[in-house]
Length: 160
Image (tube, rainbow, N blue to C red; front, side, top):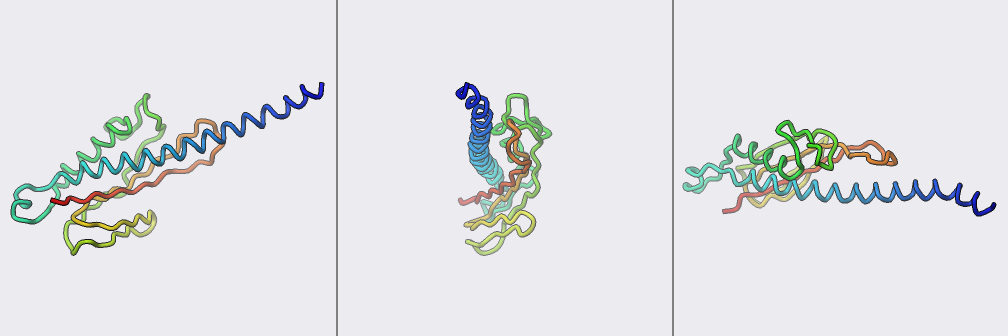
């Protein structure tokens, strides 16, 4: 009888701990995947330069093409539709929001970039760069974690 009571008490504790542990693993994995995916997206965007200006030694991004390349890369990497809503096969459950997309084309390099409040993304830019910051909610599969959003910044330089 004491073993039955022990199991009745310990089973919920074990299940809760297992759910919490798996949720912590998912948080770590998703943050890493989000950062890597955004690195790929900003890389694709940084390749969209004005070829005529590049031949003259000046780097200028074609902003419409860069934004299109960034969004297309995000759609492929994170399995999103054209409105940045996740598809049914995606691990994400909420809409992605590009909260900042900036282009640094002039100045002396290397230079420090600081987005300031409210995102506080800091990076050392070694050349003309595309900087993107995205925000997406953590998908809560078990309900043991708090509601929070990932805010991830990424930048990529165009170095000829």
